[in-house]
Image (tube, rainbow, N blue to C red; front, side, top):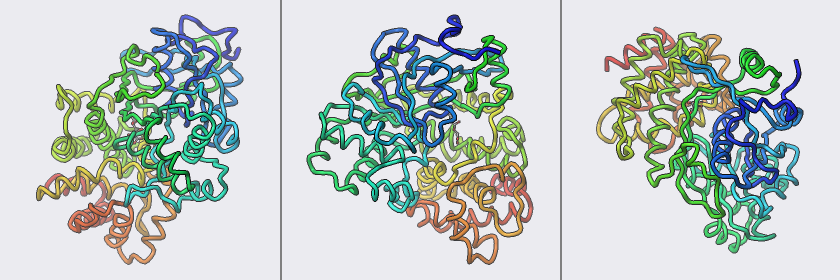
Length: 488
Ligand code: CS2
């Protein structure tokens, strides 16, 4: 079958408009989420208002996606998988592609180029290298240490910090850095990480002043469930488009982006794509990070231990649904400062519908991966809030216990194949902290204490509840632990 290219671009399937040659946006993290979210919104915005908003995309490590896209003139399809309808649209907004691990000099030059007005990031929670216990930059993280030592950064965060330093030195043109990751106070958090990185790199006071005045870091909440592509994604794209796409992205229909309108050098007319600009972004972040992402984590760890391969298959287990509902309504919701007009019942109902999407087939292992960095964005603040009110958040403790049993199981416990497929970048470090443990409870305690922020660990009763639930998972199974958490 012919390969997708500009010569055979199926115009009827184009999403929004094609970008111009000029790139106004530099994007770090060319993963599936960016390609189905910010890229789509930018194409739609360009259809409403043309502008120089082509995207220079940077993949983290591998040339797999960049090569596939270059071979098809930067085009790719988004396969929207909704139980009611299937749609395939082609995105045409990327104009140049680089790889962080290999193209450092070009990336620093791109960050400094005054034609670039926005730097967007989807580098995942792990890409910010935040210490889960303090929230500060983890100077011991290998990428951070080596970027600082070499001053030739090969990781996105280092390239962002050094790139801004170069911009300041060369022209000082204002710019905005927009984090599109699932972080608490994403803009503030990114600013703090970049500032700390620059200070560690001995940036001048002059630079730090410029960073404060001329670089904005708008807060933002992003939402669209985007699983990993499968052979079926490619087959669907080929069937609908009549050409072969080597790098399609599957996604649910739902998409939301809420941004603080604080841009120093202009922005695409994203509101034309349905993006919400508001001063209440942090409230939307809380809603999304706790209800969707927090609920997702609990589904993934219970579902993983119950050997359910997909999110819909996990969520359909009545005991899992009961735990998740209790977690959302009794433990997450009371901690949320809700946006004006927010309808919590409708939101939760919609979440369960999104999690039930069997045609999307989102994998349990995808959501369960990277738990060490994801959970700290989701669990601690609501847990501490409940504990401070004198209430034990049993489902939040179960989330942590489930994570430990999936990704760093106690000796002699086999969590099964779904849990084994979860990727945990800190697995070695977790095993090391639990090395001296003599039983399940001390194993779980050691990991919880090393992985959660100090203010939560200070609530010893929470850590004990995590240890206790891990013990029940190991001896009685995940259903027994769920029953215990629900009965408490
Ligand atoms: C998921 C998210 O990976 C996870 O833990 O909760 O990737 C989720 O699918 C997205 O944030 C949806 O917007």
